[in-house]
Image 1 (cartoon, helix red, strand yellow):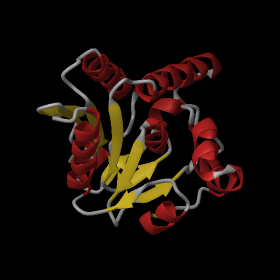
Image 2 (cartoon, one colour):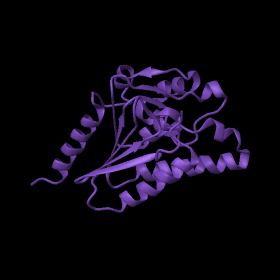
Image 3 (cartoon, one colour):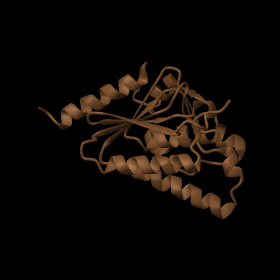
Image 4 (spheres, helix red, strand yellow):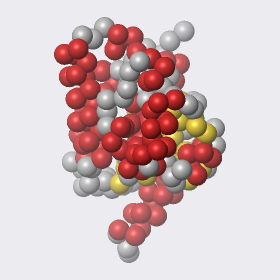
Length: 206
């Protein structure tokens, strides 16, 4: 059983808030090229809207996002791999530069490129069951979407090196202690919405 027929991403808007949800949990919400292209299309539209002041990125079931599709990566030659890496870097930098407040509501497994996406957001909150990892070392690869630059700035060089070199999995409590996330709460989407609402009140007092 697969969820190929489901849209890779679904978007919901509530007043000045947009929620972008990765929607293929059976496949572990992979960030394939097609999904990245759809993410670019959606975010490009949202970033131009003055009525949208906060954007939450989240996943479905027990997965936030699992990173690049390994089967897809295996088909790329060196030139295509470099192009794919550059595409993801540019997309995530656009998210990092967005005028809106961006929040990663990390509901479960947050691996590889999925973690890179979370790192590009302004704020990261997570459920108690969330798990964080950069597993590329086990595959002989390293993330190419900006995580090698953003992670050390957020949690420090030594801890970031441990992330990349060991492919270890970290719990939400560990992520909170090291400053990777700012809150642990369930349901995490409600926590993210509360953060967005509070930021909106501060920036737009009545």
